[in-house]
Length: 367
Image (cartoon, rainbow, N blue to C red):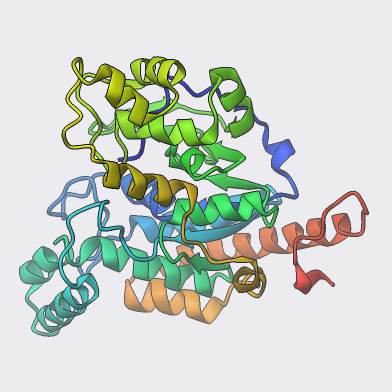
């Protein structure tokens, strides 16, 4: 869902030339979901907007990642993908053991494929216990085969991205959501896409987009609030961890925060106007801690992960063509383009790292 801050946040246009030579932390679940959704209708699919292969599994995210990595390299951008770790107990109602649920349905799927039960395999592949966990698992496998580093955060992918930017390990975070701001990300990039268009939710129409940058400090200064108050504002309007207070939208929340400075004060002074019964003191503290003191992989754990290697041609072909039966010629053509873009990107970084004005980014592969 993400917090709805679009009414309050000011963005500035950023050209791809300004991103050349930058390292960007990618909110992997957010971006992969965009790639997964950016697909054409398939008459052979139970869900008409999903691309599937002959094994009934969704493949749009795989093609999407292949194209997106080539795009990053072609713009002299090195990406590092961050994935969610465990779910917060507040974020969503989850089963007792998601991993075991996935493993169980994975075995059912494989059994249906071996038995030639195509319809059963499709039902399993489209089920909630299999579909998204399998997409994430395959995305990690493909990134590994493409030589692209990824981090499995102890908790939230967005909090990990924000941490990397705050510690100047990377230059920007890339996410379409605004939660990065709540985690204190100094610079967030949105609309980082080659197509420069986005599919409108629930419709087969697209809107024109362009890369935008969000500067957290500039926005806080303009709104005349601090980071702590931004989190309180988000709690009032609703986050992934709390549904929000009925009757309070972004503008009202901002007015209340400016007037009373904190949620506790707002509850004390505005309790007759709004229903705060579900917002206990303990819950407020838990949500604040998630955003202001997030669990992240610290610098020493990240350092060894920042290695961008050439694609493993055999590994990519095995995953995409042998496992998913994708067109080998098409995949190989895209791999050749990606290799060329990778080499040019690597050369660009290597030459620029000789410039003393460029900060060394732990790119040991260029030493």
